[in-house]
Amino acid sequence: MKTRKIPMRMCLGCQEMKPKKELLRVVRTPEGTIELDPTGKRNGRGAYLCSNVDCFHTAVKERRFRKAFGVDVDPEVFQHLEGKISS
Image 1 (cartoon, rainbow, N blue to C red):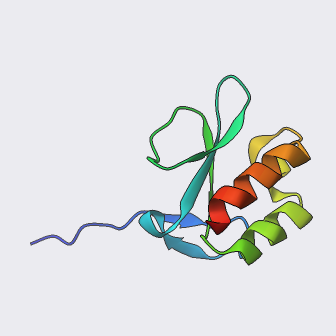
Image 2 (tube, rainbow, N blue to C red):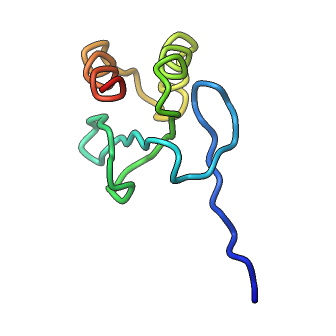
Image 3 (cartoon, helix red, strand yellow):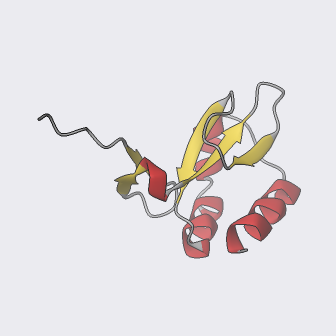
């Protein structure tokens, strides 16, 4: 039998390739809002993060969200995301 290929994605924080199911998806919706996507199926541009808070802080510090989404992200959005990731 053929073995299934496991989809891999890169974490914005640590820049490591990991299986897609192990990562959290952050999405910029067509309306322009940035939210956590627990289902992984929402419309919009997606970026992936480890569930580690340190990876989140690294991604914020090095402005990787801005690069991934092509827009500046409000600090309020970062606070909201950090609260959801740490819980």
